Image 1 (cartoon, protein in one colour):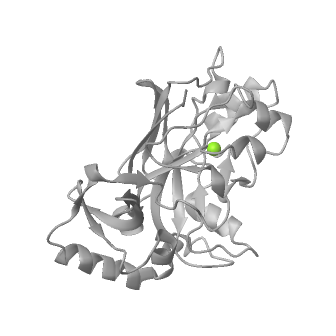
Image 2 (cartoon, protein in one colour; image 1 turned 90 degrees about the vertical axis):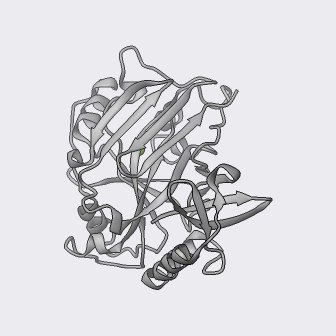
Length: 288
Ligand code: MG
């Protein structure tokens, strides 16, 4: 199933997308996506029943799609340098010795960074002039868990979505810790939906791409991750409880703007499309 959060006639609701263009509202199962996720398999089976019994849906064109989880339960957890080619380009661009991480490099983005899948990304040159894109596969955790084994890890995944890990490179450098440069308002476009885990037989076999103004800038494949999704869940959950509704962004392939020669940063009017195979695309314009 493709699960969405949307605004329709001034109210916010969740639904399932069928036939690519009809929405079956799921509001009488749960009021928001995290509440639906917390219902687990029972919530999904009720959602399937709703879809099967629905005779008249709302047209996708008539709603405003929101991020599937517009206000996450806590910060989005993100992997840095999880594709070797991106780790190499990042170190080279900064004149540093090339080093691949031995353990997942984890930082977070503020919940207030979440942005809709087709909404504008705010731009204020007084705050940052080095805004960059990062197309990523994002994993949605389906149930609370701690000390999750590698073998069981994927059974904790509720579904998958697409994230653009928009980054203010100047702030990322200036503050040393990534948090601030990764957390400007609107810097986590997410969506356009959650594809439930049952529809993605192998999440390590998906192409990830990013295009800016129609020109492809990133092309990677989730098989190239240094730390697989299962390994990441295993490492993250060691002694630390993962929560239903948690979002884990799995890192970006090579081709980001700051590592290009010369560096390329986003400017007002630029349109960025991030795509993950079998999941979908998000399209966001830099405001101004
Ligand atoms: Mg990233």
